[in-house]
Amino acid sequence: MKKKSGKWWKIALIALALVVIVLVGGTGLIFREELKIADSVRPIAEKENVYYMEVDSDYHFGEFLENGGASSDGEVSAFLTNCISNGFYQVDVTNEGPACSVISGMDDNNRHVWGRNFDWDGAVPIIVKCVPEDGYASIATCDFKNVTGSAETVPDNFIDKMLAIAALYVPMDGVNEAGLCVADLEVNEGGMEAVDTEKPDLTVTTAIRLLLNRAATVEEAVELLRQYDIHASGGISHHLAISDASGASVSVEFVDGEMVVVDTACVTNFNLANGDTAAGGESAKERYELLCAIYEQAHGILTTEAVKAALAQVSQTKGEWTTQWSIVYRHDAQVLDYYFNGKYEEPVSFPVPVRPKEL
Image (cartoon, rainbow, N blue to C red; front, side, top):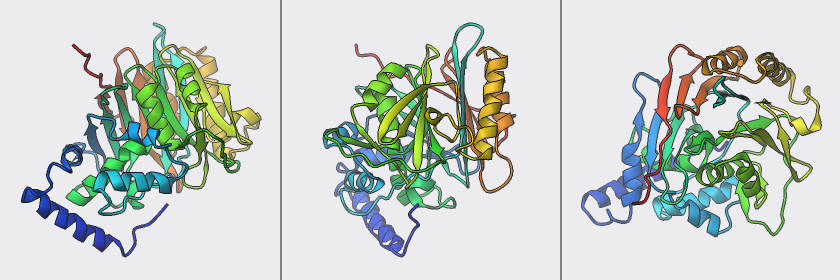
């Protein structure tokens, strides 16, 4: 992950100049959308280093796709630099891989339930509500550390709130109004092979944004992904756990330069396509086997409390990599319950937004 360097003071000066320009009314209209988004950034009450942001457009994502997407974090950064700052300063994004767990099932009323742990070495979560004009509304989670390179930097001032806009392009997970659930998980057994076909390009995190905006089902999500060359972020491998309101649940994996889809209710940190549960290391194997045992014992019938209990059992509480956040989603209520830093007795709930219907 890129660290802050000596250029930061230059960014601060430029941003300060921007504030002055806006205040005197010179270019307020140029940055109207950016200022509106930045103004929505706020801390979550009583939760340290957890923030919330609202975006009521796709924030140039359609333009991003029309321009061919991006094959690297650097290309995403260049695109966002032009959008957020009109080229006045650099916006860096990357994605160091999460070591995580996902479980999906149906409750006894045949309604989808889903849970995910995000395990990493420190994070600054930003809950991003996005309501595009021509796509599905969604709630997603970003790690602001993927923008700033620092777990100590939070979006509590003008400069960092402007930088937080980049969070829209680097979601780690999310759920949209159609009930599509997506999570990014690290794959520990080797790198994703570089691909270079005639297809347009997406990094893993921009692929998640695409799915949240435009896919309602697992089938639609897989079809969308097949239209792009998908590239690693942060120099590591990834796979995507995707499920929908029907209960369909898959891991989309990138093996030997090909996209492989595996039906599964449980995902951790190895490619299931290879059939080697030990490939991701002992922790990934243990978490996967425990989640599968829970799922099989319940015959796939899981309440939200059961999903929360499963996440608690596989949460990481010691060592360098610990559970930064957990999510339990219940489709019937269209609500995401977040639990930060393993505190499963302290839910923070967010309704999944719905895009206003055209009159």
